[in-house]
Amino acid sequence: SQQGEEDPQALSIQEGENATMNCSYKTSINNLQWYRQNSGRGLVHLILIRSNEREKHSGRLRVTLDTSKKSSSLLITASRAADTASYFCATVPLRGAGNMLTFGGGTRLMVKP
Amino acid sequence: DGGITQSPKYLFRKEGQNVTLSCEQNLNHDAMYWYRQDPGQGLRLIYYSQIVNDFQKGDIAEGYSVSREKKESFPLTVTSAQKNPTAFYLCASSIVPGPEKLFFGSGTQLSVL
Image (cartoon, rainbow over all chains, first blue to last red; front, side):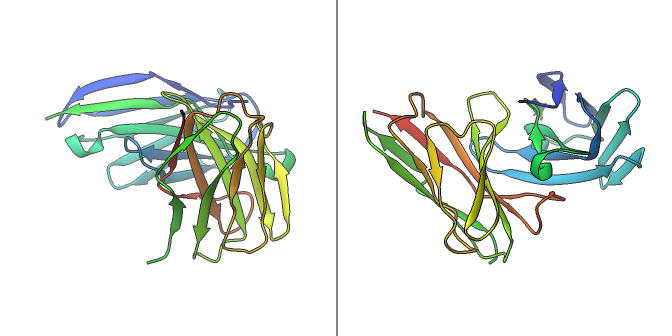
């Protein structure tokens, strides 16, 4: 089952613009993580935000979490062509068998030079 | 270099054939995972192992089998019972089950001849 749903499914922007991707989930979580995947490659962990945190920064990345709305957003500032990739949110449930990560369907970001 | 190695990168399966995908890690991680990714989709969990000689089914285990005889190895067999095996298969590991952060291999693309 897919816990997280990303929005939009695809996003195309110009280099230098900001990119915002949203993730909604259904059940209470322990933490939410964002991953990046270049075409035909494995995923790379970007950032983790815990259920008691509201905002986190890492370089040009800013992640917010609203547990009351069961949603998160990933903001990439001053985007570069190299940011072109698919971005996935993944949640670890508060309670559940093995506390496994559940991934959403992803947002495909294209940054045009 | 530490990391996760998946092989082969491309694999072709004939009708009625079992094929095995290799996953090796030298990160000394306890937990290992297999995910399936269909085109334009998110990841779905096939099997996971939290410790040597133990593994559990994920969301889509039917038609697949695994073993965990060594900490560093978690091979996945796609059996003839899996009627739609064409997909991108990703192996991952984490320090502890939970998980806080997954490390991914570069994937194996399996296609049916």
